[in-house]
Every structure is written in structure tokens, then in C-alpha cells.
Image 1 (spheres, rainbow, N blue to C red):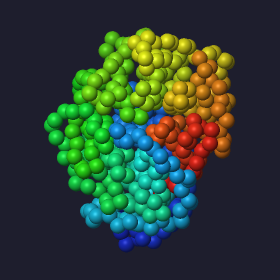
Image 2: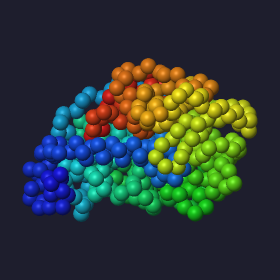
Image 3: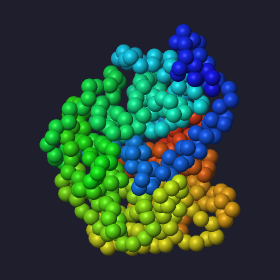
Length: 420
């Protein structure tokens, strides 16, 4: 630990030497365990209503009006241990060697990622060393080369048009910037005109405020505008050109828009155990939410509510089957009409029985065989990011720091990619 602390706080004359050894710093096992524990709480908390800021950093957005998704390349080749550094604009902050030491250490944790839909070679990742520094790493070639930059804590990422990304700086997100192979842009110029998300624009969810949450549509030319959002709407997410969220009052009301915010529909799913979890569903697909959030660290599977796209006002509630153990949900999505979840089964002594990908059949779960199985057979399994390319693409963290895995077939097979 002393080496990294010296890098972050000490004599800059030692930075280059220490950076070369950053991945070899001793005694990080306990820190890694603590990081995994925090990651588990963060991922579970992102499913709860209270963790709106965290939920906003999950890369689930697709560029509106750009859903052809013909390109689906294979996994990136494993990069060398010391990727080349693409120069970035000069700043008064830490140098590149300091940032590399943070990103390349096994004691850092991956906070969020965004991927250009259909092109996993283009990726942006947020890393954190303890609670001291957030570092953005991004690449256009699968991390054969990369760019690094210190960013404010609380920042988030959203994939944008033309292979770029939108960086929301800090928890408040008052400044948005585009990231591409040339570096970071000037702040996005946000107009006051409120209009729906247009073709080639991407919705970026800002931090919640009193009265609701603002969403900004950002275009590839560095301009943006607010979109119409109903007052009091929280937990907003975008997936497959559908916007969805909840409003809370006497109960919970589910809201969605399939036209970029031009019109909104709502439905009362009925009383139940909340906060709920939205099953990621694209425009035109049936609706589903899962009950069970305890508002703390876990998301037990209590019941599922579904409504067809043709009759969204008619909801059916199915309670989870009681099988002697209990289930916690990490995330859920609509896989060609089937609801899939990443979930864990626990016995009455809170010991893990099984974990992985499951399909929801009524109120029961049926295991989906995954290859390789070790990617999803651990208790903190949860989606780390979503994208939509002619169907859902689900990303999870790997068992090794610095790798992520994706599935394009509902969890049956997984591909590995470098993340730094």
C-alpha cells in the first residue's frame, strides 16, 4: 500500500519507478476482498431506488434511431502488460505515470464502463483507488493503446454516437463532455429548448433533484438539450430506445416512453414489496418489474409483475416459488420474450447454494448453462453494463481485475475482453 500512497501523495521523482511496479504491490489481498465486498454492495444498491446516482453510471443506453447493429466482432486479443499511452491534453492534475499506477494496480476497483454498441474495441472505464482518486481509461482498439485522465468522483459514462462517449463529470453532473480518440471535448453546449431525443442523440441521466430527474439528449457535435420528463420521475434508465422509470407517492407508478420522451405512459402495477427492479426491455417489448428490494444491500426475489406491450394497463403478479432457500437478484433483462436474471440461491444459513444465469418461468427459476461457468457462479454476480445490438448484450466483471465478459446469447456463452 505504501507504494501507491507514495505515488498519489509523495515525491514525483519516484513516480516513474513506482509506476513500473504498480501491478506488483504486495499485501493487496485484503484490499481486493474489501473492494469485492464494496462492489457487491454497490451493484445490489444500484438496483434499489435510493442508489440513483450509481444506477446512472451503468452503460445501458443505445443511440436513438441507430439500431442496425450489424457489426458484432469477436473478443479482443489480450493486450500486452504495458499498453501504449495515447497522449492527452495537458492538465494541472496527476501525470500519466501516476494515473497508470492507479489503473494497473490489482488493488483498484472498476466502477463503471461504457461500450460502443456493436464495437467492444471502443470502451471507456472508470477506475478507483480506495476512495482517493477516480481515473478514466478509454480506448479505440481494445486497450492495445489507451488514454488516461483523472476525473471528479461521481462521474459516469454513456456511449454516444460515432464511437464516442459522454462523460458526466461529478455527482451533480453539471458538466458533460464527449470523449473520443482525440481526447475530451469542451463542455457540451446544452440549450434550453425541451424536445424529444432525436436521431443520433443519446439520453444522459443527470443526478436527481427535488421534483424529479433531468435527462439531456447529447449529439455527436457536442450539443445537447433537455428532453420532456414527467415531474417526480426517478430511477430513469434507457435501453433499446425505451426510457423507463418510477414515480413514488402513495404507491409506485411505472412510467415509460417509446418515442424519446415525446409522450409518456404510466401504469400502476399494484401493491407489493418495493423498491422494484425494472427488467431491461426494449421498445415494443412487454413490460416486467421484479419486487423484493429491501432498500439496503440485497434484492430478494419476492414476485414478478408483467404486462404485455399491447395491454400495459393489465398487470399480472406472480409470487416467487418457495423452494426452501431464498434468491437474490443481481439484474434482469428481456431475452427475446424470455426474462433472464443473474441471481444467487442461498440456504437458510445464508450460504451460497448456486449462482448464475436463470430464466424466469412463472414464479420459479430454471438454470441456464453458461460457458465458461465460472464467470457467473459466484455470489456477487450482477450485470455491470448493458448494451443493445439487435438484442440485449450483458457485461459482467471477470474474476480477474482488468477483465470483463459479455454475452450476446442470453448467458449461454461469454467472451472475454480487456478493460485496461
